[in-house]
Image 1 (cartoon, rainbow, N blue to C red):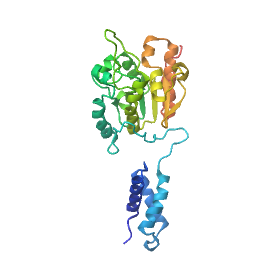
Image 2 (image 1 turned 180 degrees about the vertical axis):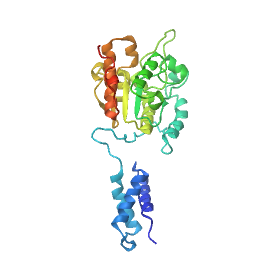
Image 3 (image 1 turned 90 degrees about the vertical axis):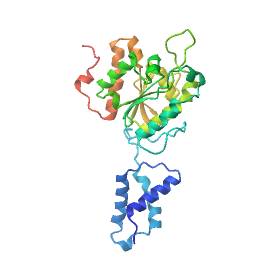
Image 4 (image 1 turned 45 degrees about the vertical axis):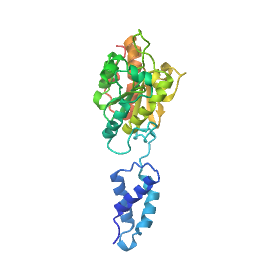
Length: 297
């Protein structure tokens, strides 16, 4: 009795996975692939035997893997985990939840683990199309356990809402998950070191690999350095220019805290133009009111 074409396809997919291939083919894609074989062999006698069909599908199934379009609006390819924390199976929400425990217990930087109140993992929608990445938690975030909750975070939330999103619809994380420790007797927040960011960066890679955002927004020079390793190019020159991170379009812009210290309409407009570019890249509708924000009247 002839084997069901879809079963043959699924068997071929499993064979490819056993050989280490990472396939993103959907159920619909598999069904379409199965139907092409059924159409090619209208009667049961002319259908290929299962072994030959499996080999044929093994060669052809790659055609149904999603490819990145010229404007980079397709979903990102999975980022290879360097932390070994992210699981391979489950929904995006389940995979993020599974890695949260090990990250919260991380002690790779003993001095940071000793000084922190808690690890700031990240927050938002596991299915987010846009991911905002900052540098490190500050004092407010260290207490709350959530990124961008202080004054800069409130400004970021307003920015997100002005773009037409709710904060819960995007994903927000930092390159460094612990607040950089301060010397005794000193207050405020310090910039994380390159070594600290490199140590913690694999967790961010895992998060990006799970979420697969369509676009990443790097908030500030330190976040850009943590993601791309760009130390010499300042954020003033880098902002507004598209870059790429593991196949994901990346937009650098000023950190919200910069706008708290610089209330210039010109600087606010620069950040807003960056966000308009993000919306355009996503194909989101932009109203005349949105286009006119922070323009001289």
